[in-house]
Length: 294
Image 1 (cartoon, rainbow, N blue to C red):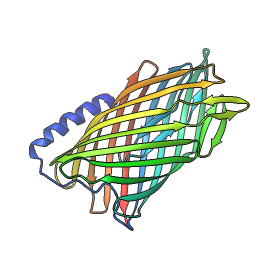
Image 2: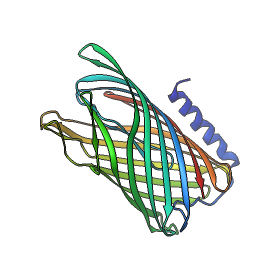
Image 3: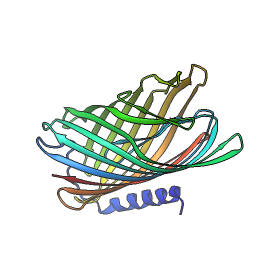
């Protein structure tokens, strides 16, 4: 069964499950003061790209972390099978403020067609590592809650014309999250804006466009242990240039769906799928997240 059919089947079953829903309170978004949590997300991403300049592709995991697939720039058709592992550690400094860090590891198999010449390449290693903080400006009451965050990649790598380059603190992301609960439904809106600084590689000036993501979602609690979510995600990638000559930008809408199950009061497992398809790029993603609170 294709990932699109699987997603559609999941959504139908999710709606059907509403008939036996029980009201529950929303889980805590931030950690309590002095608490620590760890999560591991394993993802499989299938990409097909046709573009004169191939830009980074982002994927947001169920717990809000971002995965950025390494950059490949040049005139080529790319098919990529990508397995990703993301380890995230969070610590609550107060009930409203937390700090987090993450390291992202990957294995990929890439088939590229460059001017009718087919090549194949396999890569493994660390993709990115980043740190960030999140603060709750407003708690939920009669009006929605509001949280803001900022993060930066203190290590990232990009592959340009078969050469790999390592960067430090050259990408930043600002995020906003608001949600409102009408038990057993939570309406959520997440937005993020990624800023990329200009880079110099082999005397070439490369500017990777800034990225905007807006994601409205609906969460539905079947019972205190199980919840479903589904939504849309709009992604815009600004113009990118190489020596101010090659320019490219794109926008896309993807469809997301997921389910979470609380194994205990401190352990949770979640499954998430995302599907998108535009003329220059098709992306299918499935991921599983396991988290534990200490």
